[in-house]
Every structure is written in structure tokens, then in C-alpha cells.
Length: 419
Image (tube, rainbow, N blue to C red):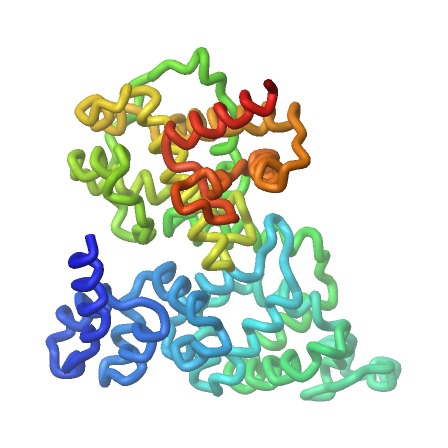
């Protein structure tokens, strides 16, 4: 184990050596061994930096930027393609069903500061509904093409006008500088679009705009393997573990090229990892990826937080592994068969329901002992977590449930408290 870890570290340490002189495909392969800031630095110093960035899946690039931190990854954001930027906005600007004005201001600042050419490239990929929603949240518009002769429109109290046609008032003065810069670039690179947007902002209904823009966003994400929120939340539906039966009704899955696989660490000692490896199915891996994406969408804030996203990914792997151990009796061959014939969503729901039973049990016990109280608190959470004090290293913290042994340890702990 120690030797393998040293080898991995060596690869990471020397992953950027002479990469600039490698063929493009080899550069990409070398980058897969790198993570975080080292990976970003290698990309930024390479002559093919823009091409290497554009070749990354949107989700891969987004995770890299979030891992480094947006403020430290501005150069990388500037290299992102239009579709990659739209994906970042789709990830960042929505909290469930609600559009976030503050996040929109923050992220559009990055793109505005990239200059006219950068802004123009992004503008080609932003849909009209998104632009309309963003500007309607930031502006009150007076005047218009049909009102040129009305002096009262010219005299109306306003903050700014670019053309003596539309008179603009900023709703949020803290956002006015960025919104003003955004509009200045917009009218310069696409005046007809500016006019259309200003006319629409005058008569737009915010609720309808938000809903329509969200539908377009959901459609884009669905093409990349992310379900709508309603569908995503359904993975957390409870089933009765006592009456759970395998249906074996999974239809043959097709591989979708546009769907990026999420880098999830399964742990080589789990039944799930071994069964997935033996199955060797790209379609099965994409089904697993879709389940992970469903959990990320259901959790909402996890999409924009690497630590939370990692925890969600570990939870999905843990619940699947628990369910697989439960229905296969730990038999690897049977586990492969189950993965091939049973929908992973149902298996996840079984694993989730088994863990959730611990929450109901934990609600019935109390303890004044610190470790016991900490363990109970973890089990009572919306998504129950395993107290690491039960592990051999005895760390005072939490992790996701990984296997049936975790469940058995928690059950034994709760039974002991009940006397």
C-alpha cells in the first residue's frame, strides 16, 4: 500500500515534466494524473492552453475551477469556451427553483472583466431568456423606440442612458458598476440585441421569466446527464427494506457521448467497485454517473461546493454498496448480475432506506456522554452520517456510510444505549 501511494505521488510530482513538447493526446493523458492547482498551472503554462481547456468536459473544468477557487482560477475561466461558461452559470446561478441575483453578479463580473472579445464569445451562447431574467432583476427601463418624442420620458428620474432612447435605473446600486459595464459591452457588440432586451425588460413578468429560464437551463443540463430537480429528488424516495424485491426490469442502456463521467473514488475494497469492474460496461458507468448527478442536483448547494459534492458522491457509492451487499449476500457474481439487470436508482433507494432506519432509531435514544451524543447527532441528520469515532482511528468527526458493517456497528451502538 505504501509503495503504491509513493508511485502515485511520483507521477503527480513529475506529471508536468516536458509536457509542452508532447503530442496533444498525450498532454491530455498526462493531465489526468494531475489535480487542483498543479493541473491548472500546467494548463496555463502550455502553448496549447486554450485547446486543452476547451477539450475538457464542462463538468471536469468546473470542478477544477471550484477546487482551486474562482478568484485564483480567473485565467482558467478566461480560457473556457462559451458552452463551458454557460455550464458554470447553470451550476452557479440557481438555488433549487430560484435564480440568485448575487451569484449572477459575481460570475458575470468574471466574464465582463475578460474584455470585449471574451464577452462577445460568451454572448453567442447565452439564451435570450437568461439575459432577460438577469437584466429584469437589475434594471428599471423607461423610454423606448416608440417614446422618442415624449419629453416626460427624458425627464424621468434615472441613473443612466446610453442612447437617449432607453433611460435606466439600477435596482441594486451595489451591482450597478458591473451591470453598467455589461450593458456597455452589450450595446457595443450587439446593438439590436440590446434594443430588444430593453424593450422586453420594460414589460417583463419576473415569475414567468424565472420559470422559463429555468426550463431552458434544465434542458441544457439534461443533455449533459443532469436530471430536472423533481426527478433528482425522487432518488430519495423511501422503500420498505423488509419487502424489497428485485424486479430485473432494467432496459438495455445506450452510451451517450455528451455525458461526462464523474470522478468518484469508490474504494477498491468495496463490492460495488469489484462488481462494476467485472461488469465492464460503459453504459452502466453512465447510469452510475447519472445517479451521482441526480444526488448533486437534489442537494442543490453541493453543485457549487467541492467538499459537499465529494461527500454526496461518497454517499451515492456507499448506499449502492450497502444495497448490493444486502441483495447479493456479498457474492460478487450475483452482484454483477444485479447491477446488470436492476435499475441503480432502486438499489440506491434501498440503501438510503436502510440508513434512514437508523435515524428513526436514533430519535428514540439520548445520552449525556460526549462520543455517544456526537454519534446520535450524526444519525439524526437529514442524511444520516457515520460517526468516525467507531472507526479504528477513532477520529472525532463524520463520514458517509460505506457498507453493511457500518450499519451493523450503528445498530449495535443504538441497541446498547437502549439497554
